[in-house]
Image 1 (tube, rainbow, N blue to C red):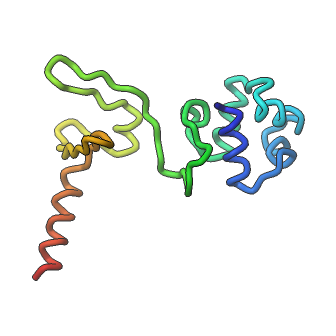
Image 2: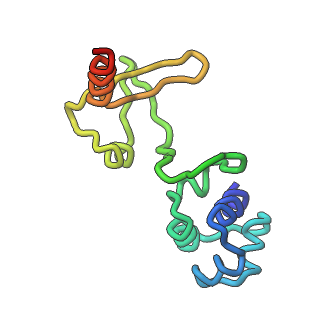
Length: 137
């Protein structure tokens, strides 16, 4: 998957294999091997690729991007959570940091039986309702 993602992201950034190789200090042939799946970058090189392509490392490695449309900035995969006996989940630390979620914050849980669940900051929901109410007046 990393090879496909690497090729996809490199093309989205309009970079040639040679240009990307130069930026991270490897040969063009190394980029070719990574993209073709003949080899994979070590952790340090994967980190360099992640930074250069402006995508979190876990997404570069784990998230299929081929066929994804649009800009990937601001899109995240935070990993799996486990539902406890009473239905509680623990939001991953990185997700809490990115979205500034603090103890005591309220989240609205929305659901679509075909697409799954979504969590929204309750303040956002209230603000949207107020704006909709204001527009109706």
